[in-house]
Image (cartoon, rainbow, N blue to C red; front, side, top):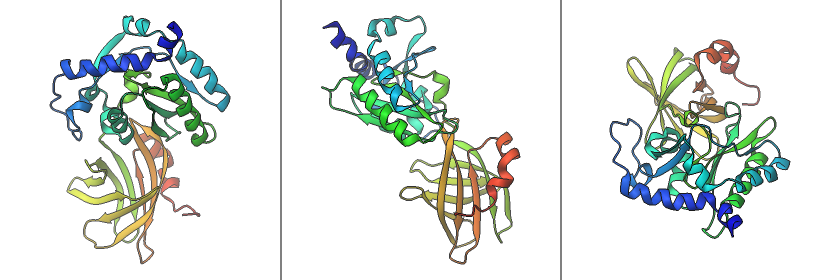
Length: 287
């Protein structure tokens, strides 16, 4: 019987914490991120300064990760000196990213996984299951799927299960505005911009004068760019590189009907841009 309880540790914690969220959480204020329903951003989640790591770098590691997770004790987790209950709104990646929002909308058997190292493994998704399925099985299936999708030199890690966060809180940062480097043929546009995500998933490109462009996303890796001062639309693809401050850094290559090209880098830091922007802005031979 004790094994059965431990097997559902995160489900049991999830039920209790979700109920607490309805009674204890206060409305969040002052956030500039897109608002979500109070029932989502006021969920209470268990956060630990030094959480147990549940991850896999190969398919063979999944069974080990499942065993580690199955051995966790719910009372021990909640009783740790570094354990705290935090509103979801205090964990920006959960309320700001598509995957985080999906996790908050899914109850109760839910697991959120992300590629590791995050800087070079841009995979993240939510695995859901009916309440009767043990959380350890949900997590194992999510890790197996993630490892298969992540590609070479990438593993996967459980970010959250039920209502328990399994990464340090610092790993759940989310930048609403990030740097962008653009080069557009024939438009005298070659420099640094700010890329700001909107509530509906579009990306606004700004300079000191205001909005200079707007990026919208289609299916898969398809993207469309419109630039201020021109009626031309540029269509192309986005190549996700990895996460920077919770946002996917991407290399984007587009062209209009006349064949004019735009190269756009979103989400990279100053050091990366200083070192690689010249090569990354060059039009790739297969684009």
